[in-house]
Length: 307
Ligand SMILES: [Zn+2]
Image (cartoon, rainbow, N blue to C red; front, side, top):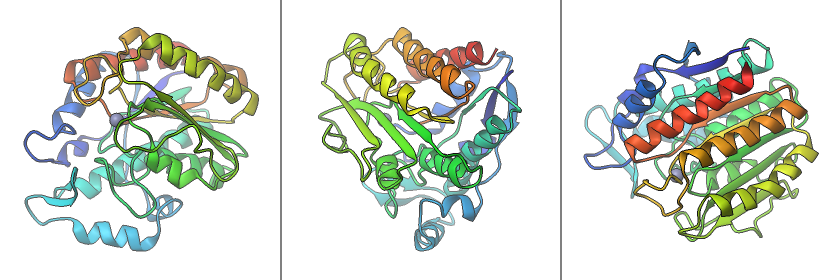
């Protein structure tokens, strides 16, 4: 089986202000790093309203549509912006994850990586934040549950920031196990171990600033056991690479080998419990060299697992 790479050039049409970390060059560098790999390259299509409405209300879709500027930039909060191409880019990011779920569950590919932007794991039910407009990982999980009829999915998030949006969107969803590691304290401030969801299906793994790969692995080992025992039928990954030691927004000290380790650990559980079915979507990562190298390492492990 092959690994799918789902992307669209219009992800480059989401423009942020000069100096903003979540910038066009991120996607350019990731795609460049993945050139030459033997991937099934798939052009993303926009999410339908029905996909987005699984996690966001219609009034939120209306509000974002009304906020798209005809030119220039529109600021939604202190760090979240829209340009004329942002809504389409966000719909492509969400749509790519939905497509990835379809391709993996139909058995057309072994697993999939969505190279898209803006990221999604900070977008709450009715609140865009943290560079994110739609809850991409959560709506992919909901698509697997509601459109494909799965009984259990897992969403794993190793971005350095807490996936507050994913947690919010899946808080009451008993069929979805959400496990996330993140630096704490750090923006957005949520993600304490005491936050466990309405059905005890949220597992937060806060990591201390300046901790590194050893602490990360120690936190994830028991979490992976819980994941395995839960027997998800699909694993969705929020793949942020901003825990890298060179990232400017945080101070965890993960190496490339740490990203390989967590990816391999996820794929190992997937191989044992759900036929290797993994859908990964790009979240953060703001040092261009670290991001592109980490994304390549992540995809190479996905390819090994699918082979
Ligand atoms: Zn992040």
